[in-house]
Length: 125
Image (cartoon, rainbow, N blue to C red; front, side):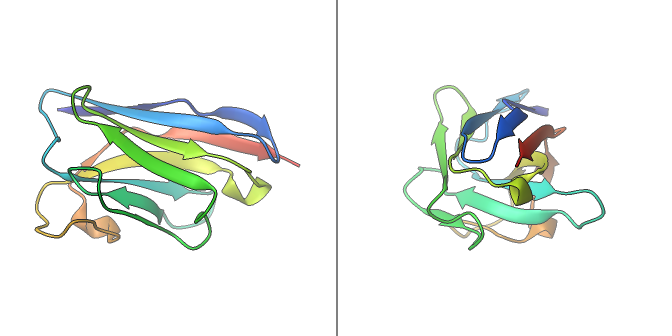
């Protein structure tokens, strides 16, 4: 079972990137998915989460209004559209699946039991 994140890169402040996370080995179409990020020297923090149907989303205050999480269950893929990027968004971004929760979304890092390898996002000022 693997979650493969991609789409990271180097972008100037104010620019956009779209991250993708594709699952292989099993489907997560009935599970909550999330994105987290970890900057150097900091703990991994919650960014966004989405319900299995895609109908419910929740964001960290720091990205609300700039980032959009979505999913395509037919493709077993979750996306994170990031607009108006800031230097403080620089981090390694991880996608994750929470297969245990009965809630529509989850912000607890410890609740996620499948993790991707991460993709680097660097925003220059």
